[in-house]
Image 1: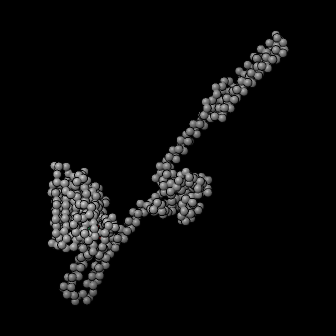
Image 2: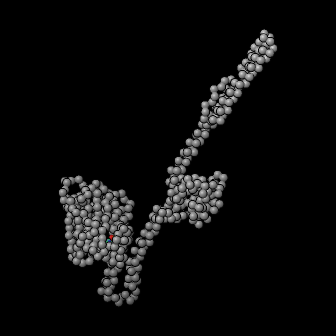
Image 3: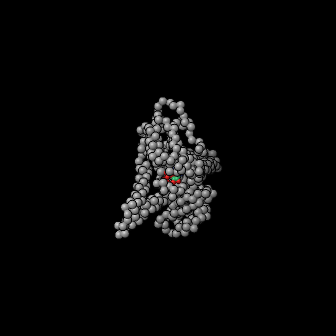
Length: 446
Ligand code: ADP
């Protein structure tokens, strides 16, 4: 400011001196020229300033004097604001990225319940298009009466369980609404389909176990009642012994169920044991000996067992799986049938244990469900032969714990082949063996 005043005073003095020397008109002319030049310079500076004010990203104009005094604090404030805005933008972007990464779905709704934003998980859960569905009412997107009722409430104490059919499968979602800001809503969705399936399986399992145990218990209780009656004193020894045999059958059955349940529970809760080399040839031979006892000479047995081939795993578990498959073959093959056991190297580099029978066979639609707990093709036949309905579930578990696959091929009235296919990584390294055995074909060759 002082510089400007000093310049004007100097110019006025210079104009006055010029006026006294060259006349009044020349003095005034020079003075006016100075004022005009000053105004033009100010105008240019004002133009540069206006351009800078309009373009926030542009560098500030290089100005001096009073202009610099005005501009510097404005420029500093503007830099501070720009830094704060940049930081806020980064934070907002971080929040959006974090919301995108949420395993739960998140949707924001405006005061008219229209979609303002949603993350990828929510778009997957509800089949929402994050771009084209923005601004659309959530009630047009989630068309379930229970959701409409829930979302129209003014307060939400708990989540809503929603069953939605999408692409031919039903998903179960937990939906929770929470208000935020000015009448806006945050909608959180969580896919609980698997949890619900697990819960259903648990409920079914408890119901199945109860059902399986109730039948022998009822029979047992009936006999106990009968034997308690005063009239029981008159029973002959033979009759009494017969009743006791029948009672024994029921306790054996309950014991078998409980033993299999305990085996399953141990398999599920303990870490797999994959350290020790197991003599699978011996296990197969021993299982075969037990199967012969069970068969009591009613079947023809054939064996093709490689005695030198060992695998890494648990001898106890593998013995149980090997015996399960063989006892099933005996139980589901009518007298006169043939049962073949094989243990050897497979063409693919692994090893296989297979049990081939010429028994009653299984219709194709039952095969995928055979390893479910308590699943039986013929309930009566299984029970009559002492089955618990858990044998194949146990075998499947043992297979999984040995990285093996349980393959089932069967044809009704022709026979079945149950094969445990072990990967090469499970074989105990030894002398390379040329005696690769032919793995069972697609359909049982009987
Ligand atoms: P179970 O104790 O009833 O035999 P499993 O789990 O061992 O239970 O087998 C499940 C069902 O699979 C059996 O009830 C039977 O219907 C069928 N199954 C198993 N093995 C054979 C087989 N070798 N031949 C025909 N059906 C079989």
